[in-house]
Amino acid sequence: MSEEISPKGKEYLKGWTPWRLRRYWFYGVITVLSLAIPWITIDGNHLFLLSFDKLQLHLMFIQFDMQELYLMPFLLMLLFIGVFGITVLGGRVFCGWMCPQTIFRVIYRDLIETKLLGLRKRIKNKQQEPDYSKTENKIKRLVAILIWTGLAFIAAADLMWYFVPPEDFMAYIQNPGEHAVLIGTILGTVAFLVYDVIFLQENFCVYVCPYSRIQSVLYDDDTVMAIYNPNRGGEIYNEHKEKLFTKQKDLLSVNTNAECTTCESCVTVCPTHIDIRKGLQLECINCLECVDACTEVMGKLGKPSLVEWSSEKETLFMKGKTQYLRPKILGYIGILIVVSIILGMMGSEKEYMLLNINKENRLYSIKKTDEGKVRVDNAYTFLLQNTLNEDHKYYFDVIAPKGMEGKIKIGNPAEPFNVKPGIVKKKVVVLYADEMLVNDERKDTVIPITIKAYALDDKEKVTVIRESTFTFPRADLVK
Image 1 (tube, rainbow, N blue to C red):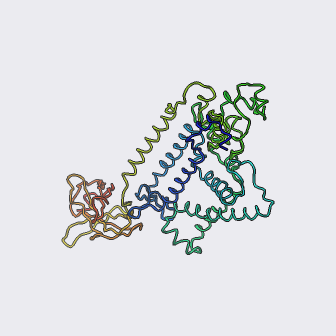
Image 2 (tube, rainbow, N blue to C red):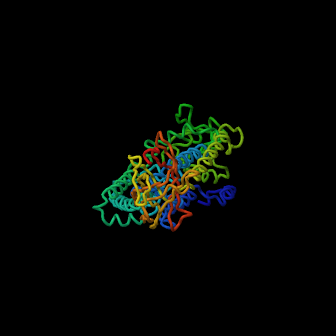
Image 3 (spheres, rainbow, N blue to C red):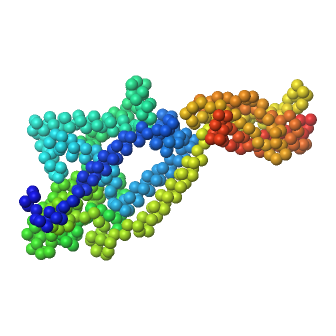
């Protein structure tokens, strides 16, 4: 091949690294991170875990329980706004560089079918399907399906690790009869991945995925994408998307300055089977395979690629350089920053003990003590949950309004009590007053109080404050 390249072409292609190889490296990084993240823990808390089993969210090694899942909308906002912002900036680059569908197809088509088994002769030809009628190819395809099915089980397990902690997952799959939902989800996911990657293929991107339809309303003239330059290459299609030329000589007869060789390498290499020279198309996933193909062909001639990763403003309309930090992008960045700050602030207010206080229906009870005093009791139901990973002993203090300090006391429980991790403990708590708090002859008095609950062995970290009330009867009942 080197003999076909002119000295100018050799110089032009010197040091050139195809986008395809960069994508492979990027896929490797994403794959390693996806497999590793569920296993990364500190003190039993995961980097990220949305546990359906224990109804918990682990985020940045902090554990949040069901009552604290108000954080989830902010995580979803970050995800969707981030993807929308990336689309405005770089087109459908998420699809070509990060989407699991694309990564799985590359693994199956480029690695298994082409490199390992030789079913496909060249990675650069994605239009021509192998001849499966041959016995040898039938056997190879069966092997390819078996290899991918094994990888699909790993992918399905990895997906489940984000919802079932890996340490629990390994124990659960040893007793499949007791965890039918988990096993069924894994098998269903594997079946979908096998059908999707082997049979549905890129039709998922073209016909099923809604993202291709959403992207069309997000693009603007500065959106960066794989784009053919008709100003240099010549118009191959008319305004009705009808093909005008299939041979270079016919193109040159109309436009003597046209540089397109009509080799159609950009078409042959496209995984979604489109012709990038036709213009913007929803099927394009910005994988940049066409950019590589044209760069290699035109590079041999010592010319820059006719298919560029550029914007319509720069390549088609020639109105100047692409503006990356334009108002729309800055707006997305600003929203992401605001949402991240709110998420950080709300996450920093994490409570390591969940406490709900419900006052019982009976407002109070009045009785005489052995010392002859009149005692007013108020009963409450405390629902308390230890959200940490170790046992703790809990107790609480009652903070009364000014002038009543120390007059509302704890009658029950008399001693601190132990709560195990993740267990909701129900505790009947009695507060009482054996002194005259309010001398009102006409009505009962509702006194606002503050209850401070805490772990005796980690009071600085595990402390929550709740507001409640203490009802004191009218004076004639107490007297």
